[in-house]
Length: 402
Ligand code: C5P
Image (cartoon, rainbow, N blue to C red):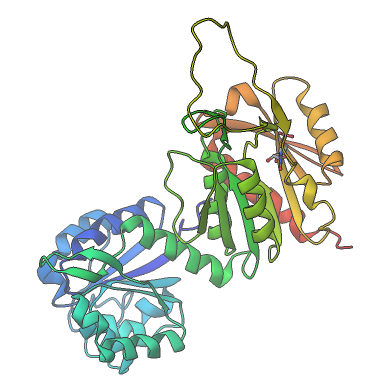
């Protein structure tokens, strides 16, 4: 089930032109199953009207402390009190100052004062206003009080100046909110999870490489799942066409040797390694510095390959690290996977049919550990990732440490 399903969220929208971006956020959070109560400040309502948010969330939009419904369901206190999380986006210099001062002069500040739920603040304003010591001091105060504050982006602003003060995109805001909810109550809070994804590329010459068909979809979905469960996530990926999930540390690599260095480094502080990458077993013995030319008088060519190190097997002595491998096979799936579980010293191996799954949107999985096998029938990769993560966490929590 999606982390956001059934969650009560308050989305505070202040008076900035960036408010147009959070209409999309309100829609995305609602589609993910959350109950989104939008609270508009007076200035916020001048940029995007209540009707827009009401249509997108399917819920009444609240703007005025003195015009709340009389049935008591949404009182000026109960909104923050009942919320699982609050997000203020865009948060203007004025609202940030009022929150830092502990004021309760409108519905948004009152709601923020009367809550124990986690708060995510996404400042967006003119770069000079953002850099001003007053704003920075107010943000430092709120950070100290436990608010999560997002760094604004840098670039061109609406008023044609460039600088730091842009509201992050809805995709980033949603990812950061998911990470915050996960860190608050998720089963992996306090844990560090390393996920490898995509396929490696082994250079032959400056323009050619040996690669494979891995799309990275499964690994990226697993990284997002681990984040939603509260983990600090490092995603180490070969080249893919995908956008990395928000709120994860992203390390792009190309070759197996680069992936090995990045995985080994990230695993120093990690609790779980999910090695989903399709790693090349061999690489060209040498990559030429100039492009290999076809000779008119010769037929074919021979490429000399050397064996790559096995990244996960190289971590076999790390008994404290919970290691999950993948086995994509074309034949004798279970037998090959069982053999890899033992040979590579894994806690869990996830077997799948290589032809039916690599680069495809759906996947069927078989989970194999030292106690037996568990099949998960074919479903979209994001759903399969959620089921796999639940099964993985259950095994991680009952593992026996050396
Ligand atoms: O390629 P193979 O089927 O042996 O992959 C099984 C598991 O081992 C996968 O989790 C893969 O990411 C990992 N692996 C690795 N280093 C390699 C080859 C595979 O860590 N050189």
